[in-house]
Length: 198
Image 1 (cartoon, rainbow, N blue to C red):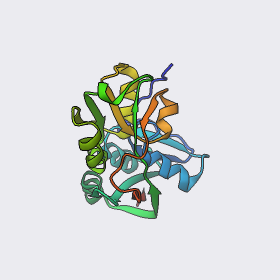
Image 2 (cartoon, helix red, strand yellow):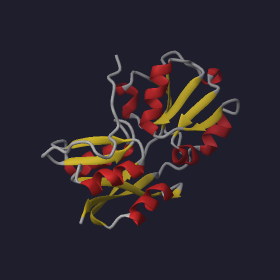
Image 3 (cartoon, helix red, strand yellow):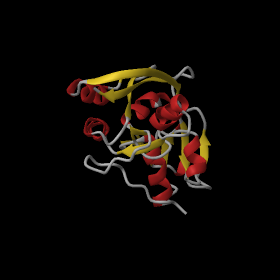
Image 4 (cartoon, one colour):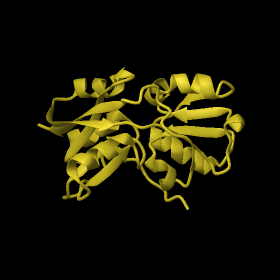
C-alpha cells in the first residue's frame, strides 16, 4: 500500500536535526544525490517546486537545500538556477550524480498498451529518442517530478500510463520495469549544488 507523503511548504516548523530540502517526491534524483553526499543520518524533505526548496532554506526550516544545476544531456536546469539567482545562498559542495532513467508501468503492462508517458520535462527531454522510436503512439506529458510520476502511475493503476523515473522507484511504488536505461546517452549525469543560507 502506498504511504502518503506531504511536500513541504514554506512556514512548516523546523526540527533540530539536519534537514535537506529537495524538489520532488520520495525517490527523486535530488534525494539520491543528497543521501550519497550526506549519508542516511539526515532527514530529506520533499518539496513540490524549486521555489519551495528555496523558501524552506531561506526560512531556516532546512539546514541545506540541494539544487540541480546541469544535466549532461539536457543542459542547464533553468528553473533551479532561477531560484538560486533570487537568493543569496552559500554553496557548500557540488555533487555529480549518475542518472539512469527507466520506463515504469503497472505490472503486466506491455509497450503497445501505453498511450501516455509522464515525467519531469527535463527527463522527457533526455529520453526523446527512445520515446519516438519505441512509443510513437504515446504522448509525452510533463509532470512535476520523475519520482512523483512513478507514484502517479501506481496510484492510477492504468496500463495505458507509464513513467520515466529513477530505477529505485520501481520497488518503492511496486511498479514493473518496462524498459531500462531509456535515456539518449548512457553517460548521463546531473551536477547538483548543496546550498545553505548565509
